[in-house]
Amino acid sequence: MAEKQFVDIHSHILPGVDDGSSSMEETMEMLRIAGNEGITTMIATPHYAAGSKNMDMEQLVGIKNKVQETAKELELNLDILLGNEIYYSESVLEDVLSGKVMTLADSHYVLIEFGVREYFKTIYHGLQEFVLAGYAPVLAHVERYQCLIKREDLMEELIKLGSYIQMNSFSLCGGFWNTEAAYHRKLVNKGLVHLIGTDCHDAKRRPPCMESAYKAVRKHMSDIQIQQIFVEHPRKILENKYI
Image (cartoon, rainbow, N blue to C red; front, top):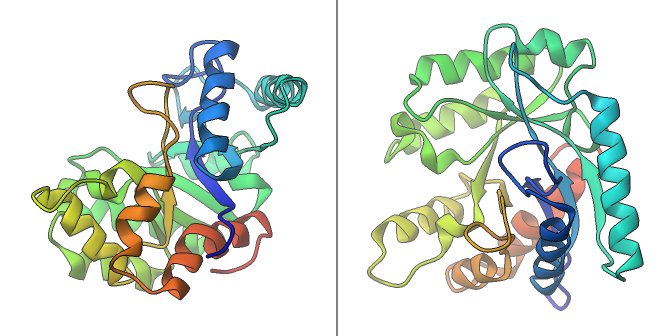
């Protein structure tokens, strides 16, 4: 890939809205890092959980606009879009249908997470609800769910259902002796992961790193596969096209 223009579909860069960035200053530092990593577009995905205290959409739009304006003043040339990372519960689909929750960049894609110890049956039926409602669910940070560890057959079931799989960039990074990272790279190589997101939360402990993940997997994948996962697939979300 001659020019890397990554799209980060999973980030917590909006200041003061969830467990991500704590200030506008930290957000700007995160954007600086992202730009240096080759990221040109970021979808801010603050957490949403039904029944919890969630910032409403109007507030989030205002904060996003302020972030974009401040970034422009500092000559940080990144496009900031909005979405939510939706914590699954039985009632949360109603909130999406009613417009209380944001899809990814106003597309038919929705970013959904579950509890790390959730049963596979619950994950399957939860994602199925969104598919039947006309959405394209993206399962956030697939590597965290205990029921899916070393269960490629179950991941394939979710994909056949109509779901897409996102993995965090840091999970791909690690040397030869890092068996977890090696296994995660294997999943990407086998086509069981459609999207890479940073899931960044701050500028130090969980920064928006993409270049290191790109370098980690390019040794094991074709240029076509790399282009799809890091560039084409996330851009199809922005264009609201099917992956």
